[in-house]
Length: 238
Image (cartoon, rainbow, N blue to C red; front, side, top):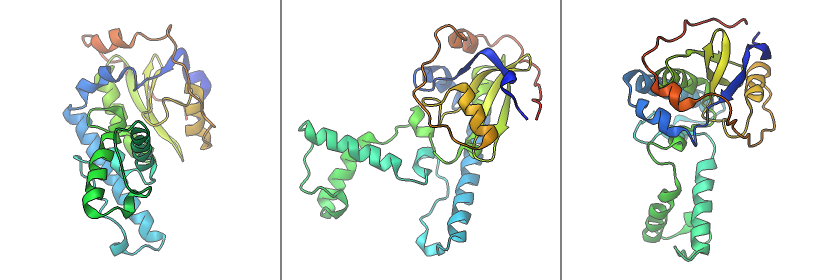
């Protein structure tokens, strides 16, 4: 089993919010795109099978075949993105930037509902933002994509996937030690140790906003240095 001793003392969680520019150029790499499409297609197939097993009829299930133009976020099983967007609309209304005749947008007349939906779309994830790739509940299927993205962005590290019963993520290793953790779903609320505990024990920590170290890895230098060979892939003790 993976132990905390596998963590390098300067191991860091990659900050997808503030370091997004370092991985953005690699999103179009064929291997990265292929891993994302493959993973999301499998996730959608799994979700459909889950709903059918819970008693839903085929006609009651929306078409959840993966469409890359909608983005992974669109397939998050819960309504968190809708709630986030509607909260954004409410704040805009408080500022006088938008008006609506009804507190429940679902009951608006068609013309006004179309206007509301158009404004609400401003607060949904945009392409090329890290939010676009956050399909919560799909960690196992996003992990191969994170691995390929890590390999392209930081080729000096040896990249592996850590699979758990309830959570999976990608890690970059140097000399058999974890130096960098790629987890686009929990990077802003779990520490490196908490992420590994989540993978190993299957119990999600309460989470908190984790400050990123200013004395750890030089992400920019590492990402720009593409002349050196990647470290030999090292299997973790399990």
